[in-house]
Figure 1 (cartoon, rainbow, N blue to C red):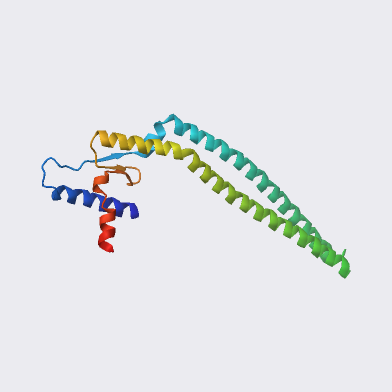
Figure 2 (tube, rainbow, N blue to C red; figure 1 turned 120 degrees about the vertical axis):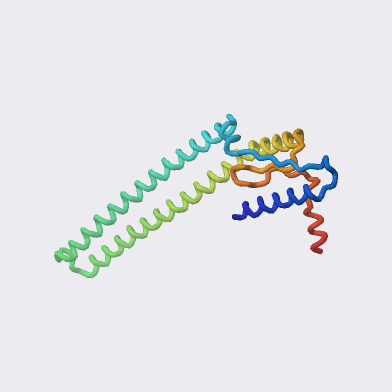
Length: 188
């Protein structure tokens, strides 16, 4: 919703600016690009995606191993717990010391399961953050290159504003139409 408001605001400014100019030659030109199409077509983007997919596969394999370990420990815990219950019910274990030893063993196993589960959750969160950071690092030079090229093409074609079709964001705006400091001055 925020991008649609920004888009509406910028379009309103662009249209209003067109009527403000008295010079018949002064005309605002808008353009747009589809960043998704651009990224799909660039070999550098494909290479980055491939690298990210390889990283993700490595992390997913490690996560699967950790999840399997957790499941195995959980099954062992369940089996030992059921066995302990059956021994207590059948009367095979009757002394307080044996019951206390079983409770301590079950508590230790349960604590180990909890620690493994928390470690797995932490690992998943860390992996997600690492992948997002790496994606940002890898795409930054490419995005900078695309932005610079958009600016060059816009200037050559005398386009005042360029929007991204994919999300409606402003990718290029002619500095002549930047009224940021005029608004700030008026607000002070």
